[in-house]
Length: 384
Image (cartoon, rainbow, N blue to C red):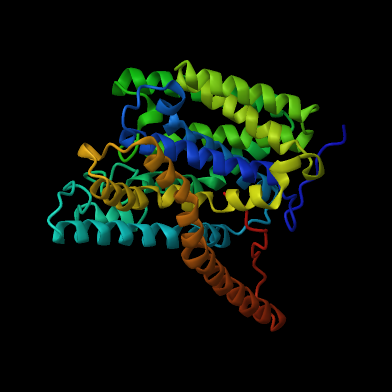
Protein backbone atom coordinates (compact mmCIF):
# COMPACT_ATOMS: atom_id res chain seq x y z
CA UNK A 1 0.00 0.00 0.00
CA UNK A 2 1.26 3.47 -0.82
CA UNK A 3 2.44 5.31 2.31
CA UNK A 4 0.19 8.10 3.49
CA UNK A 5 1.50 11.54 2.65
CA UNK A 6 1.09 14.16 5.33
CA UNK A 7 0.19 17.67 4.24
CA UNK A 8 0.97 20.26 6.88
CA UNK A 9 -1.02 22.92 5.04
CA UNK A 10 -4.25 20.96 4.59
CA UNK A 11 -4.03 17.64 6.44
CA UNK A 12 -6.60 14.94 5.83
CA UNK A 13 -9.81 15.41 7.79
CA UNK A 14 -9.99 12.36 10.04
CA UNK A 15 -13.72 12.45 10.61
CA UNK A 16 -14.18 9.00 12.22
CA UNK A 17 -11.84 9.78 15.12
CA UNK A 18 -13.43 13.21 15.51
CA UNK A 19 -16.74 11.41 16.07
CA UNK A 20 -15.03 9.06 18.55
CA UNK A 21 -14.36 12.01 20.84
CA UNK A 22 -18.06 12.31 21.67
CA UNK A 23 -18.19 8.68 22.80
CA UNK A 24 -15.20 9.26 25.07
CA UNK A 25 -16.80 12.37 26.58
CA UNK A 26 -20.10 10.61 27.24
CA UNK A 27 -18.29 7.66 28.82
CA UNK A 28 -16.77 10.07 31.33
CA UNK A 29 -20.15 11.79 31.80
CA UNK A 30 -21.99 8.55 32.60
CA UNK A 31 -19.23 7.69 35.08
CA UNK A 32 -19.66 11.11 36.72
CA UNK A 33 -23.47 10.99 36.92
CA UNK A 34 -23.75 7.33 37.91
CA UNK A 35 -23.67 8.05 41.64
CA UNK A 36 -26.94 9.97 41.29
CA UNK A 37 -28.92 7.11 39.73
CA UNK A 38 -31.14 5.52 42.37
CA UNK A 39 -30.42 1.83 42.83
CA UNK A 40 -27.44 1.85 40.48
CA UNK A 41 -25.11 -0.99 41.19
CA UNK A 42 -21.52 -1.61 40.23
CA UNK A 43 -21.18 -1.94 36.46
CA UNK A 44 -17.66 -2.63 35.25
CA UNK A 45 -17.95 -0.62 32.05
CA UNK A 46 -19.31 2.42 33.90
CA UNK A 47 -16.81 2.07 36.75
CA UNK A 48 -14.00 2.35 34.17
CA UNK A 49 -15.45 5.55 32.70
CA UNK A 50 -12.46 7.56 33.90
CA UNK A 51 -10.52 5.84 31.11
CA UNK A 52 -12.37 8.04 28.64
CA UNK A 53 -9.75 10.62 29.60
CA UNK A 54 -6.99 8.22 28.50
CA UNK A 55 -8.75 7.90 25.16
CA UNK A 56 -8.65 11.69 24.82
CA UNK A 57 -4.95 11.71 25.68
CA UNK A 58 -4.07 9.10 23.04
CA UNK A 59 -6.19 10.99 20.51
CA UNK A 60 -4.31 14.20 21.28
CA UNK A 61 -0.95 12.59 20.59
CA UNK A 62 -2.24 11.09 17.35
CA UNK A 63 -3.97 14.19 15.97
CA UNK A 64 -1.27 16.67 16.93
CA UNK A 65 1.32 14.40 15.32
CA UNK A 66 -0.88 14.21 12.23
CA UNK A 67 -0.93 17.98 11.94
CA UNK A 68 2.44 19.09 13.32
CA UNK A 69 4.98 16.23 13.39
CA UNK A 70 6.32 16.64 9.86
CA UNK A 71 6.53 20.41 10.28
CA UNK A 72 8.50 19.95 13.50
CA UNK A 73 10.79 17.33 11.96
CA UNK A 74 11.45 19.43 8.86
CA UNK A 75 12.10 22.62 10.87
CA UNK A 76 8.94 24.34 9.63
CA UNK A 77 7.40 24.47 13.08
CA UNK A 78 6.61 27.64 15.03
CA UNK A 79 6.42 26.76 18.72
CA UNK A 80 4.89 30.16 19.53
CA UNK A 81 2.11 29.74 16.98
CA UNK A 82 1.51 26.16 18.09
CA UNK A 83 1.07 27.19 21.73
CA UNK A 84 -1.18 30.09 20.79
CA UNK A 85 -3.39 27.72 18.81
CA UNK A 86 -3.53 25.41 21.83
CA UNK A 87 -4.46 28.27 24.17
CA UNK A 88 -7.18 29.36 21.75
CA UNK A 89 -8.48 25.79 21.73
CA UNK A 90 -8.72 25.09 25.45
CA UNK A 91 -8.39 28.22 27.57
CA UNK A 92 -11.58 30.28 26.96
CA UNK A 93 -13.93 27.45 27.89
CA UNK A 94 -11.69 26.47 30.80
CA UNK A 95 -12.02 29.96 32.28
CA UNK A 96 -15.75 30.13 31.48
CA UNK A 97 -16.52 26.86 33.27
CA UNK A 98 -14.31 27.84 36.20
CA UNK A 99 -16.35 31.03 36.59
CA UNK A 100 -19.57 29.08 36.09
CA UNK A 101 -18.76 26.64 38.88
CA UNK A 102 -17.80 29.54 41.14
CA UNK A 103 -21.09 31.33 40.48
CA UNK A 104 -23.14 28.18 41.02
CA UNK A 105 -21.36 27.43 44.28
CA UNK A 106 -21.79 31.01 45.47
CA UNK A 107 -25.50 30.94 44.58
CA UNK A 108 -25.93 27.67 46.45
CA UNK A 109 -24.28 29.12 49.55
CA UNK A 110 -26.46 32.22 49.30
CA UNK A 111 -29.54 29.97 49.15
CA UNK A 112 -28.44 28.18 52.30
CA UNK A 113 -27.35 24.98 50.56
CA UNK A 114 -24.23 23.05 51.52
CA UNK A 115 -21.27 23.15 49.15
CA UNK A 116 -18.04 21.20 49.32
CA UNK A 117 -15.49 23.62 50.74
CA UNK A 118 -12.92 22.61 48.14
CA UNK A 119 -15.08 23.86 45.25
CA UNK A 120 -14.32 27.49 46.08
CA UNK A 121 -10.70 26.92 47.07
CA UNK A 122 -9.04 30.31 46.64
CA UNK A 123 -5.66 28.73 47.31
CA UNK A 124 -6.16 26.55 44.22
CA UNK A 125 -7.36 29.38 42.00
CA UNK A 126 -3.95 30.61 40.70
CA UNK A 127 -2.92 27.10 39.63
CA UNK A 128 -6.27 26.67 37.87
CA UNK A 129 -5.95 29.99 36.05
CA UNK A 130 -2.46 29.11 34.81
CA UNK A 131 -3.53 25.54 33.92
CA UNK A 132 -0.90 23.96 36.16
CA UNK A 133 -3.30 22.43 38.70
CA UNK A 134 -2.50 18.87 37.51
CA UNK A 135 1.20 19.39 38.12
CA UNK A 136 0.98 18.97 41.89
CA UNK A 137 0.72 22.75 42.33
CA UNK A 138 -2.88 22.93 43.58
CA UNK A 139 -3.50 22.08 47.26
CA UNK A 140 -6.98 20.62 46.62
CA UNK A 141 -9.19 19.59 43.70
CA UNK A 142 -11.22 22.77 43.49
CA UNK A 143 -13.39 24.61 40.99
CA UNK A 144 -14.17 22.63 37.82
CA UNK A 145 -12.37 19.45 38.76
CA UNK A 146 -12.41 17.75 35.28
CA UNK A 147 -10.25 20.60 34.02
CA UNK A 148 -7.26 18.84 35.61
CA UNK A 149 -7.02 16.97 32.29
CA UNK A 150 -6.73 20.29 30.41
CA UNK A 151 -3.80 21.10 32.69
CA UNK A 152 -2.30 17.73 31.76
CA UNK A 153 -2.87 18.50 28.07
CA UNK A 154 -1.13 21.84 28.54
CA UNK A 155 1.88 19.99 29.93
CA UNK A 156 1.94 17.77 26.83
CA UNK A 157 1.61 20.80 24.55
CA UNK A 158 4.58 22.46 26.20
CA UNK A 159 6.57 19.24 25.79
CA UNK A 160 5.47 18.62 22.19
CA UNK A 161 8.87 19.53 20.66
CA UNK A 162 10.41 16.75 22.76
CA UNK A 163 7.77 14.24 21.61
CA UNK A 164 8.32 15.39 18.02
CA UNK A 165 12.10 15.02 18.36
CA UNK A 166 11.73 11.41 19.51
CA UNK A 167 9.04 10.23 17.13
CA UNK A 168 10.25 11.99 14.00
CA UNK A 169 13.47 10.02 14.34
CA UNK A 170 11.44 6.83 14.76
CA UNK A 171 9.27 7.45 11.68
CA UNK A 172 10.99 4.74 9.63
CA UNK A 173 10.41 2.17 12.40
CA UNK A 174 6.74 2.65 13.30
CA UNK A 175 6.15 -0.83 14.70
CA UNK A 176 9.19 -0.52 16.96
CA UNK A 177 7.89 2.89 18.07
CA UNK A 178 4.50 1.43 19.01
CA UNK A 179 6.10 -1.50 20.85
CA UNK A 180 8.38 0.91 22.69
CA UNK A 181 5.50 3.23 23.61
CA UNK A 182 3.37 0.30 24.79
CA UNK A 183 6.25 -1.05 26.89
CA UNK A 184 6.87 2.39 28.36
CA UNK A 185 3.17 2.67 29.27
CA UNK A 186 3.08 -0.77 30.89
CA UNK A 187 6.29 -0.24 32.89
CA UNK A 188 5.28 3.24 34.05
CA UNK A 189 1.82 2.04 35.10
CA UNK A 190 3.32 -0.85 37.08
CA UNK A 191 6.10 1.16 38.75
CA UNK A 192 3.81 4.07 39.61
CA UNK A 193 1.19 1.85 41.25
CA UNK A 194 3.84 0.04 43.28
CA UNK A 195 5.26 3.36 44.43
CA UNK A 196 2.11 5.45 44.91
CA UNK A 197 -0.35 2.76 45.99
CA UNK A 198 -2.93 3.65 43.33
CA UNK A 199 -3.14 3.46 39.55
CA UNK A 200 -1.72 6.28 37.45
CA UNK A 201 -5.01 6.21 35.49
CA UNK A 202 -6.73 7.43 38.66
CA UNK A 203 -4.37 10.37 39.21
CA UNK A 204 -5.73 13.90 38.81
CA UNK A 205 -4.29 17.03 40.44
CA UNK A 206 -1.24 15.37 41.97
CA UNK A 207 0.09 13.37 39.02
CA UNK A 208 -2.14 14.36 36.11
CA UNK A 209 0.79 15.81 34.15
CA UNK A 210 2.52 12.43 34.33
CA UNK A 211 -0.69 10.56 33.51
CA UNK A 212 -0.88 12.01 30.01
CA UNK A 213 2.73 11.23 29.03
CA UNK A 214 2.46 7.50 28.15
CA UNK A 215 -0.90 7.98 26.41
CA UNK A 216 0.30 10.95 24.36
CA UNK A 217 3.44 9.02 23.40
CA UNK A 218 1.30 6.05 22.36
CA UNK A 219 -0.79 8.33 20.16
CA UNK A 220 2.37 9.72 18.51
CA UNK A 221 3.66 6.20 17.85
CA UNK A 222 0.36 5.01 16.41
CA UNK A 223 0.37 7.96 14.07
CA UNK A 224 3.68 6.72 12.62
CA UNK A 225 1.95 3.45 11.67
CA UNK A 226 -0.89 5.39 10.04
CA UNK A 227 1.62 7.63 8.29
CA UNK A 228 3.46 4.66 6.81
CA UNK A 229 0.28 2.86 5.70
CA UNK A 230 -3.26 2.81 7.12
CA UNK A 231 -4.56 -0.53 8.32
CA UNK A 232 -6.19 -2.90 5.88
CA UNK A 233 -9.78 -3.98 6.68
CA UNK A 234 -10.21 -0.98 9.01
CA UNK A 235 -13.88 -1.71 9.77
CA UNK A 236 -12.99 -5.21 10.96
CA UNK A 237 -10.05 -3.90 12.97
CA UNK A 238 -12.27 -1.20 14.50
CA UNK A 239 -15.01 -3.69 15.42
CA UNK A 240 -12.55 -6.12 17.02
CA UNK A 241 -10.62 -3.45 18.93
CA UNK A 242 -13.83 -1.77 20.12
CA UNK A 243 -15.33 -5.07 21.25
CA UNK A 244 -12.18 -6.06 23.10
CA UNK A 245 -11.88 -2.61 24.69
CA UNK A 246 -15.45 -2.76 25.98
CA UNK A 247 -14.93 -6.33 27.21
CA UNK A 248 -11.70 -5.37 28.97
CA UNK A 249 -13.39 -2.45 30.75
CA UNK A 250 -16.50 -4.49 31.60
CA UNK A 251 -14.41 -7.29 33.12
CA UNK A 252 -12.34 -4.80 35.08
CA UNK A 253 -9.05 -5.90 33.54
CA UNK A 254 -5.86 -3.97 34.14
CA UNK A 255 -6.30 -0.43 32.83
CA UNK A 256 -3.26 -0.69 30.58
CA UNK A 257 -5.03 -3.34 28.49
CA UNK A 258 -8.02 -1.06 27.91
CA UNK A 259 -5.80 1.89 27.03
CA UNK A 260 -3.81 -0.11 24.48
CA UNK A 261 -7.02 -1.40 22.91
CA UNK A 262 -8.32 2.18 22.78
CA UNK A 263 -5.17 3.04 20.84
CA UNK A 264 -5.87 0.21 18.41
CA UNK A 265 -9.41 1.56 17.96
CA UNK A 266 -8.09 5.04 17.18
CA UNK A 267 -5.66 3.68 14.58
CA UNK A 268 -8.43 1.58 13.03
CA UNK A 269 -10.86 4.47 12.75
CA UNK A 270 -8.17 6.81 11.41
CA UNK A 271 -7.51 4.23 8.68
CA UNK A 272 -11.12 4.52 7.49
CA UNK A 273 -11.38 6.78 4.43
CA UNK A 274 -14.13 9.34 5.00
CA UNK A 275 -16.10 8.04 2.03
CA UNK A 276 -16.15 4.55 3.55
CA UNK A 277 -16.75 5.58 7.16
CA UNK A 278 -20.54 5.76 6.86
CA UNK A 279 -22.30 7.40 9.78
CA UNK A 280 -18.98 8.05 11.54
CA UNK A 281 -18.18 10.61 8.85
CA UNK A 282 -21.67 12.11 8.80
CA UNK A 283 -22.24 15.73 9.74
CA UNK A 284 -24.17 14.90 12.95
CA UNK A 285 -21.44 12.53 14.17
CA UNK A 286 -18.65 14.98 13.38
CA UNK A 287 -20.60 17.81 15.02
CA UNK A 288 -20.97 15.78 18.20
CA UNK A 289 -17.23 15.20 18.11
CA UNK A 290 -16.63 18.92 17.71
CA UNK A 291 -18.69 19.74 20.81
CA UNK A 292 -17.13 16.92 22.85
CA UNK A 293 -14.73 19.27 24.63
CA UNK A 294 -17.71 21.31 25.78
CA UNK A 295 -19.50 18.11 26.84
CA UNK A 296 -16.54 17.23 29.03
CA UNK A 297 -16.01 20.70 30.47
CA UNK A 298 -19.66 21.52 31.30
CA UNK A 299 -20.29 18.11 32.84
CA UNK A 300 -19.69 19.21 36.44
CA UNK A 301 -21.43 22.63 36.22
CA UNK A 302 -24.44 20.96 34.60
CA UNK A 303 -24.41 18.22 37.22
CA UNK A 304 -24.31 20.72 40.08
CA UNK A 305 -27.23 22.66 38.63
CA UNK A 306 -29.44 19.95 37.14
CA UNK A 307 -29.06 17.27 39.80
CA UNK A 308 -29.52 19.79 42.61
CA UNK A 309 -32.68 21.26 41.10
CA UNK A 310 -34.13 17.88 40.11
CA UNK A 311 -33.52 16.46 43.57
CA UNK A 312 -35.45 19.38 45.09
CA UNK A 313 -38.32 19.19 42.60
CA UNK A 314 -38.89 15.45 42.97
CA UNK A 315 -37.86 15.36 46.65
CA UNK A 316 -35.06 12.86 46.07
CA UNK A 317 -33.08 12.12 49.25
CA UNK A 318 -29.30 12.18 48.87
CA UNK A 319 -29.79 13.30 45.26
CA UNK A 320 -30.74 9.80 44.18
CA UNK A 321 -32.80 10.23 41.02
CA UNK A 322 -35.14 7.80 39.32
CA UNK A 323 -34.09 6.45 35.95
CA UNK A 324 -36.24 8.72 33.75
CA UNK A 325 -35.16 11.90 35.51
CA UNK A 326 -31.55 10.78 35.44
CA UNK A 327 -31.70 9.94 31.73
CA UNK A 328 -33.32 13.28 30.95
CA UNK A 329 -30.50 15.16 32.70
CA UNK A 330 -27.87 13.09 30.90
CA UNK A 331 -29.60 13.56 27.54
CA UNK A 332 -29.64 17.33 28.02
CA UNK A 333 -25.89 17.44 28.62
CA UNK A 334 -25.02 17.57 24.88
CA UNK A 335 -27.62 20.32 24.45
CA UNK A 336 -25.99 22.41 27.17
CA UNK A 337 -22.61 21.62 25.63
CA UNK A 338 -23.81 22.79 22.21
CA UNK A 339 -24.87 26.10 23.75
CA UNK A 340 -21.48 26.56 25.43
CA UNK A 341 -19.75 25.60 22.17
CA UNK A 342 -21.57 28.23 20.12
CA UNK A 343 -21.59 30.95 22.77
CA UNK A 344 -18.11 30.53 24.25
CA UNK A 345 -15.79 27.90 22.83
CA UNK A 346 -16.09 28.46 19.08
CA UNK A 347 -16.32 32.28 18.97
CA UNK A 348 -13.51 32.73 21.51
CA UNK A 349 -11.25 30.34 19.62
CA UNK A 350 -12.05 32.10 16.35
CA UNK A 351 -11.28 35.49 17.89
CA UNK A 352 -7.96 34.37 19.36
CA UNK A 353 -6.88 32.69 16.15
CA UNK A 354 -7.90 35.85 14.30
CA UNK A 355 -5.51 37.79 16.50
CA UNK A 356 -2.73 35.41 15.48
CA UNK A 357 -3.58 35.79 11.81
CA UNK A 358 -3.42 39.56 12.09
CA UNK A 359 0.00 39.17 13.67
CA UNK A 360 1.04 36.90 10.79
CA UNK A 361 -0.02 39.58 8.28
CA UNK A 362 2.05 42.14 10.15
CA UNK A 363 5.04 39.79 10.00
CA UNK A 364 4.47 39.23 6.28
CA UNK A 365 4.50 43.00 5.73
CA UNK A 366 7.79 43.24 7.60
CA UNK A 367 9.24 40.51 5.38
CA UNK A 368 8.47 42.61 2.33
CA UNK A 369 10.42 45.46 3.87
CA UNK A 370 13.48 43.24 4.28
CA UNK A 371 13.08 41.83 7.81
CA UNK A 372 14.63 38.47 8.70
CA UNK A 373 12.22 35.63 7.74
CA UNK A 374 10.67 33.64 10.54
CA UNK A 375 8.59 30.52 10.11
CA UNK A 376 4.97 31.07 11.10
CA UNK A 377 2.71 28.04 11.51
CA UNK A 378 -0.25 27.90 9.14
CA UNK A 379 -1.39 24.38 9.92
CA UNK A 380 -5.07 23.72 10.08
CA UNK A 381 -6.33 23.56 13.64
CA UNK A 382 -7.08 19.97 14.69
CA UNK A 383 -9.97 18.93 16.88
CA UNK A 384 -7.82 17.77 19.77
